[in-house]
Image (cartoon, rainbow, N blue to C red; front, side):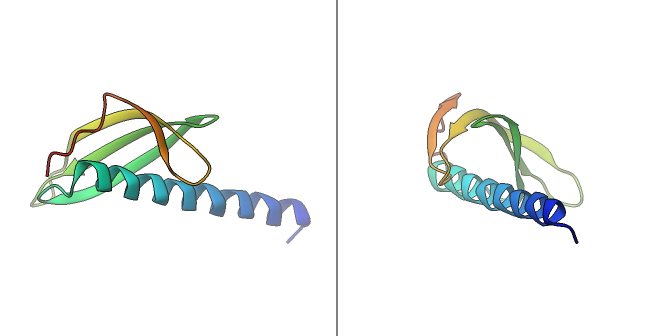
Length: 88
């Protein structure tokens, strides 16, 4: 493995870790919905992300909450549109 490949892999690992921190922060703010399937965190650009909360049973999933947000390097949510309201 070249140093460039190792660097790219380290960047990918860091991004995945940050996405996991953001997903956890969203669930702390929102609460844990019944039948939670997944929290998808998609990096858009710079510190901007799209987060979808999926719920469902029996193989079906639906996006029940969706947010555009900014987060810092520690996964702390700085802004969210719409605002994340504790629901559960």
